[in-house]
Image 1 (cartoon, rainbow, N blue to C red):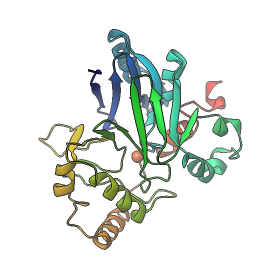
Image 2 (cartoon, rainbow, N blue to C red; image 1 turned 180 degrees about the horizontal axis):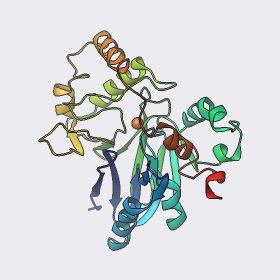
Image 3 (cartoon, rainbow, N blue to C red; image 1 turned 90 degrees about the vertical axis):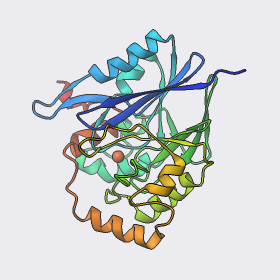
Length: 274
Ligand SMILES: [Fe+2]
């Protein structure tokens, strides 16, 4: 009988981010790794990423891919750090080119700058399949929060990025450039239509006081209980509620440093290395 898929979650309290190592046998992928960042002094750190490397090492796992669910605007990605240590490749949704195009001017780059063009090894689209040794990864396009949003399905596990949050929190915002409440609603419908034994693995949790962070939600619970996007909530009502909520939100604190690094595949801008 083939090995089962093993999933190890890692929580990053400063940003409320879940990162994961998914493996089957000795083959592994990392989903959404975090680079530590101190906004006070502008320094990055690798404490969180080194925990991932230590786990890979201690379990004898070979890292094939770092999988980004989207261009994160609230934390920096450790993708480039991990690939520099392991030789793994970085994959993200093909919609990243649209996100790069939007921000290129603000970062003093053109969209055809090698810092953008060469930032990722694989640009994925809906229906693509990645083989990481024994681990088979199906790509489900889930745009709406960002145009490059992807979910990664491995057996009955789906890593949903920011498409869905825990049921008591709801969903991610849709007011970033290229965001769409209609697309996010459609993406959620696709995820909620998956079989009942599906487990949704979150990219973030922001638990209210007294509740521990949750990494995974049974799809049936999300479908039934999500406060913004349960199956009983009509599309129009979701669109209106999401737009109303987004109108009250401030930009993420780390928006500019996060995108400046994440649109480059997790690399710092050259001038910051001098
Ligand atoms: Fe996000």
